[in-house]
Length: 143
Image (cartoon, rainbow, N blue to C red; front, side, top):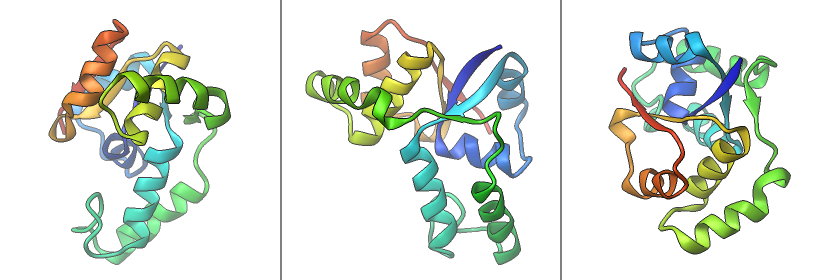
């Protein structure tokens, strides 16, 4: 089965067993993958307690459970090693208007030949444009 690269919002939903119908359809045809920085950003949100953008409205028990799941990330969720894509990230960042997080996401999706799936509320023009310039699949996913 091919991979789909999930952003931090969709990774959170997957780990919290809160799949929308849209995300469920993506994962019916793809195994999940993510990036180091998406994983870090989700972890930071869990640790920062109230105020974290991804989990700020969650109660302590829910954040603790998500933290446990992050610490024991299932093997079927691939995290693309940054050493495999660092140079490509630099190339992408040099030609596209993306952050380091965006360059990693684009490079990881390209490395996996995977669609880059982002929550529709976090759809950014820079990453979208970078994926379009590579003629790569970019999908927004409803929650």
